[in-house]
Image (cartoon, rainbow, N blue to C red; front, side):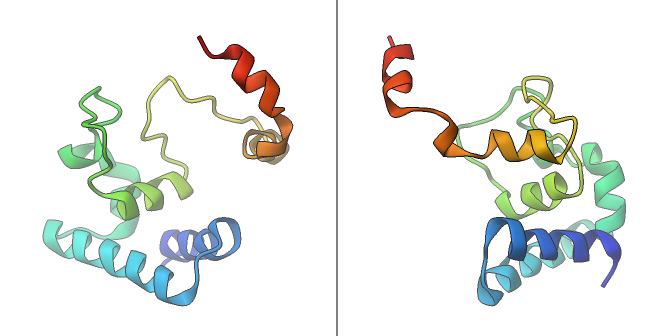
Length: 115
């Protein structure tokens, strides 16, 4: 297994919390995508914009759903910003952890901010 796939698999297990069956389903999706496009995962990370179905969010063509969630996850965990300029990219791991802490926002403040 190459490094980009191993990194993703580790993130799925340790960060996302998927079990072995869920991880295998995601890996199978990646293998199928690469087979269909005659490419390798490492090439996909560096040349993902060559695949129109992977650029819909960034190009503003999002349709309200993620057509390839496993592939998008693979790219994200390998450092690709598939979302475009609207995403706040953290400067370090501590900033990233702060973004994902739901307890940092009090429920009352969320209700007050909504129109």
